[in-house]
Image 1: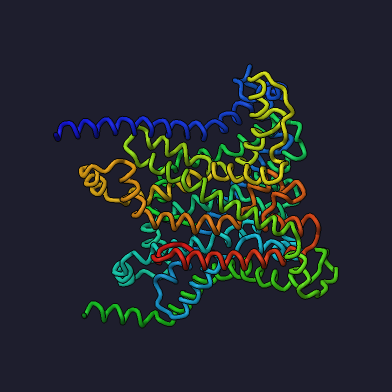
Image 2: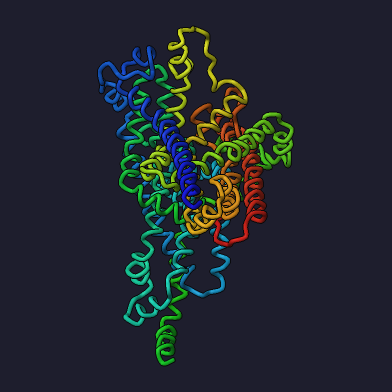
Length: 284
Length: 307
């Protein structure tokens, strides 16, 4: 009796395993196919793309990349985006951690309202701030200023960061603070020497997402940057695809170039990202 | 006790300094949020009652509710709202089952799941604009996938530009968006799945429950929280969609694939109706805040969910 049921179970497991593999392979194909087509097409000449988009390139040409770099200034826009993304991440982490420290470690009553103030930021859709921000950017003459763009990005990621950091810090025992204070630690060193290292997992997860958001952001870059010297990569790609719509190979090459930094970050940090997501850290 | 009092004495000494430090630590964050979020919201609200062409020095004329009246009687506004609703519908009938299925895959016992997981998450690392352009190329009528298929079959029919056909184009954008975020939401569901104790499934298997029965009666009820997180993200996220639509269709042709946030952009920055655009902003804000409060209120039991 037990034997047969065990066998039947095994059979079933085999059947569902095949199904699982089929599903897994199918979606891997669905995910990688468009990426592969894009990469292959970036090495093809225009006529070859028109002949057959999906074919293997006759000869791998690097012209598209050279042209994309010259016409659309691909490297410069990617550098711009990387600068914006890294500084946004740094600002977001430092300012967010300082606020979270006050909110989590101090008992003053007004802090409750400050926390609510920050949480309002989560609900405000970014787009309804476009026009006022555009207006005072014009008034202050800070269009085409990467630093101003960084401040905007930092602001729109701040609420989430403060929410996560405060939540995480609340879970750290206060005994540690008291010991540190007795040892002569001030607020500043308590935050950066004691709490910061403990918060590293949540900071890393949040920082990766802020970095991606900063690198890819489109709409503020569209209204803030009018000089092509300061275009971020998303903006430049869109601009290039509408002004050079005939140079299709170059566009493929530009897209591939733009995702390379992201893919490198993903390859290096994918364990951290998956761990953070699986622990339910990021939900916004 | 003596330990505690010594701590208190130390604390008293630094008490005056303490509140200053507390505020100093908060100031950068408060300042940045006030300047870039709170002030703009108020300004949008005020401007939504005015008429302004966006030129500096041009008069901002007070026109009361006219902007709102114009928007609410505009067919294109309701079309844009409908497109947002399509996004939500697409999220629930396509993205949710897809992401849940993928989550079941990557938490099952088949070999190579970490490789599969890494693959599935990849699209949302590529960036919205890059993804949008990739798919725009692939769907291009002149050389894209339909052209390739026709070549294989040896037929030569005219291929429509699928991104220029009303309703069809918004659904294609939705599919691309779902393709991009399937991996992200997969991890949200996977987080719920790995939290289910293995012993429950084993016990049910011993009692003779089939795979489907186990999913239906054990997994799904225990996954309620993940579905809530997904619902909140999906409903509030759908209102904010901008980048992927803009990159694929520019909201066009003739605004038919717009959502309210795209209408806001085109009314303001293309047509120079900055007052009307601000009114769009206020509508968007009211909808956004209402939706996130209502969905949170309905779905939220645990306080640990992000709004």
